[in-house]
Length: 403
Ligand SMILES: *Cc1c(COP(=O)(O)O)cnc(C)c1O
Image (cartoon, rainbow, N blue to C red; front, side, top):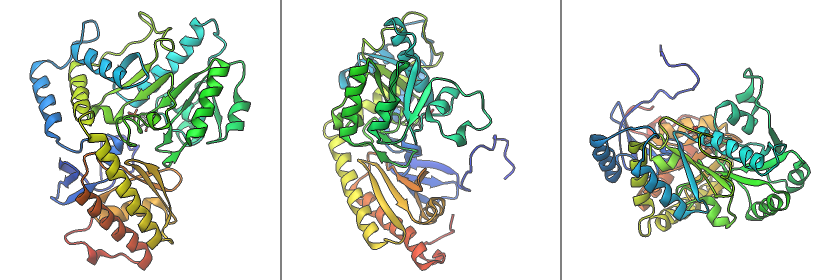
């Protein structure tokens, strides 16, 4: 297709016209079951009435004022996030990668005002993904994202995944913080064990380091609890969020304890859009639903049901499925076949899943999914897996025109 968009994405030949809950309707009128949620963003599915109401009612009143004035919607969302987490302070951004920038600045400034300006390096973990700004690609360290964009931003040291000895060895006099995703999302749904998080927390406390969690993908109910760290019971000093908190509206934040945020004083950071009335009104509406009675417990149940079904599929298709991973509704199927081919086969079966590294397809349904949709999703995923067993396209299994 002759597109005027910068060609940085390998886009499927598929466009959507509208969405209803866990369903996406293509411009050709075909219905797809959405097990991708726009990469863990649409936690409440598509066109959720409470979010649409918030968008329209705030949209009629006031969109944007800048941070030169009080913003009651942002105050309210910040205090609710503080109430629900380890944090005392919140700064709103428009994306996950900006949350990373703010978290890195906060950690460096903390060490600076604590009398340790030399402790300005941050240890990160191989396979991590923290976004696409210059700091985020340096933090993530993926050579694919760094090539050609030198000079690389200094100050990040990488260690292997889930290797405590390597972590200990990497801590030096210039280390100021450790940054990790409790479950790596883009990295292939790789779960860090609770014992590792506990040990890293201890290392931080013993060495005067801040612990930063990137919960951009794992947060806002995706893994079961509101935040993934709450299952492990190991709190960070700083945390990045985005994706799910806006339900599809661009919104992110970094959260910090009062101590960790000590350096972020008047004038030390800013954002024109960050935390504007429209975005934070929608963030509040997302929390209204997610923090509602029984919501998280119910979506965790759907996650357990889905994971159980995926494990059964692994048993039936051992030549195609190598492993099932993840927690809650952040699940992954590691395939023996190239994951891009599996994702394409899923599209032909009218179900959307998201490719990740390590040859894993991420299964990220909206948190509002019901039992019937879990069953239907498993049915469609099984049909997609079946295509590889026969070793030939099974076009006849789907009605209408294949995508
Ligand atoms: C998506 C993601 C980011 C980047 O978020 P953007 O909104 O795309 O900038 C950062 N960290 C993690 C863990 C993510 O999944």
